[in-house]
Length: 128
Image (cartoon, rainbow, N blue to C red; front, side, top):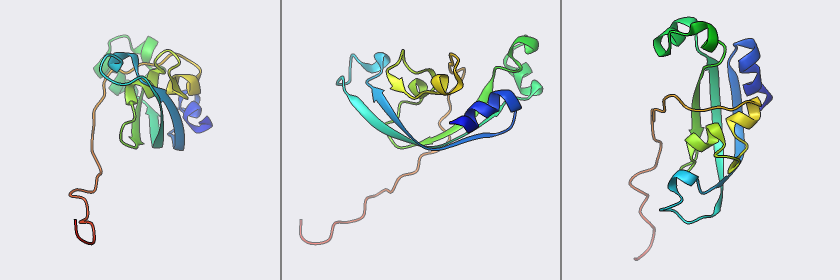
């Protein structure tokens, strides 16, 4: 977790590995999901600060935001609520990027860049 904190102060790459989250059912899906505590694993987070050129693509206020925006590639197990991992969902996900960095965080954009799964599942041995 300290490595991700270093991203904000050093502009270097921050890496986190094998982080276990406790996620209560997020408020945004509570109307359609059972309220329960779920343990999910974040396999890795690779984060870096945006360059000034990248910040200008997001906002014209470079001076305010040049030290506040980062891009993070998160690899997690299925079922992990990534948005809530970033902002914490008012304390319903711990730890969160916000609690790790010690400042409120939110998402400007979220892209799913890949899914890894074994499909179709291996055939079971023996008669069905």
